[in-house]
Picture 1 (spheres, helix red, strand yellow):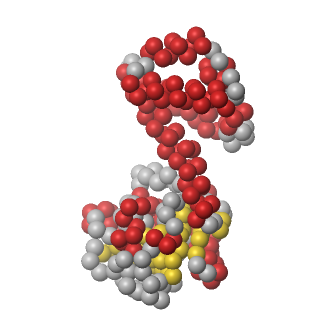
Picture 2: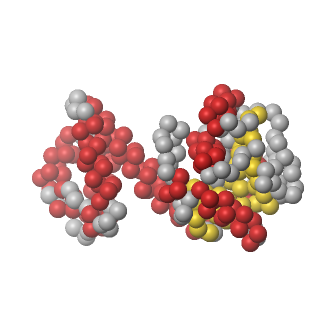
Picture 3: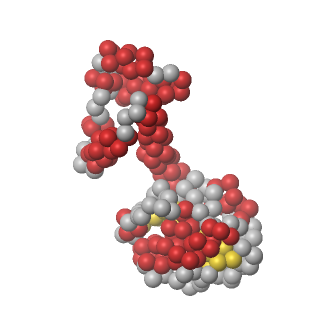
Length: 249
């Protein structure tokens, strides 16, 4: 099977690397950012182009959500399979006359961070059973966690991921602002963060909750509010209200 990856960002890089490590050949990486494409090509020994899109049996579109539709329109092949890697878009966003699918890896991707690809869940959707088998087979060569998913289900998968990853990371950023303001090394908080994440591998998140809000400790809550201002204060109040509402305090 001739495979082309379209994109030069984090998802494109990691998907190409996962394929390479699983001995799945990638014929080309195509995109607009020549510098990033050169970097991926050099690291993974995959040909790249910013001008000529190779013919392929499978195109994987690994670009930002707002670019997927426009990029999909450049694929002129009709007897091919095209899948985007978005968690929040339907396969119908793809505009060509080819067969349409989605190939969603559930993970946060940064080029500088090594990943265990075998642990990444893949959610697959296609127009017919044959294409579903093709994509599931590819994903299964990378990971042991492959699942068929409708668009309706995938929307909730992506929403859950935003709460569990993007929002949590934003709270890390806010926490670092506070520690930096008092010249406290943020590294000192990493064991606490690591333990918090590890705990939910064995304890349901709701049962693992600790802190002044779940204890309804008004003295501490009010003290913290006096130390904060602006958006951080609003986040603090909102989070505590949500915790107390969950536990009906």
